Length: 203
Image (cartoon, rainbow, N blue to C red):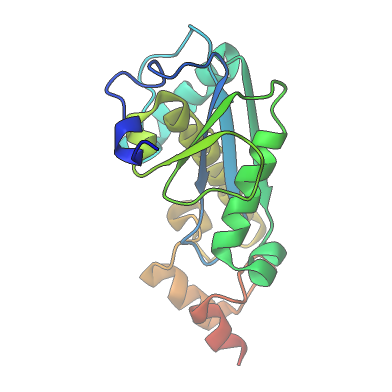
């Protein structure tokens, strides 16, 4: 069997002997609040310019590229695992579940699934895990962008619902501002009760 390193192609998604290649990535493993969101993308020959790891792009550029991905991809899907599922399953298993749902939700069945990271969901798809895949494979990079844009928009909406926590700025991550707001304002229904900083406050 080939080592995973051999699947890190310099020409993204182009050296695999398949036509329908889905890239999958998730966003939101580290935050204290909000769902974990995953996306899956299958491209044909039309790939928008600028697709790469979502963390390397500004918010405005991510949003523009996300629109181009949705209009040019052969298939795409955004899915999630809820805060309740995160607290029940743990964040790793919830992230894998969100990725599973994203691939299951594609309108085309992929022949190969490229997954960012070193773990694969429990599924029957032909799949390869790729560490740092969001910067190495264009379909994974596209998935990271769709997931990031979706989750960020949800956190901005949550900021309007729960003012004072700063969700629009920190997107739920455990910043000093967020931890201070948790201590003074308390825990919302959108906070992950299994995560240590939230669990300590509930005690």
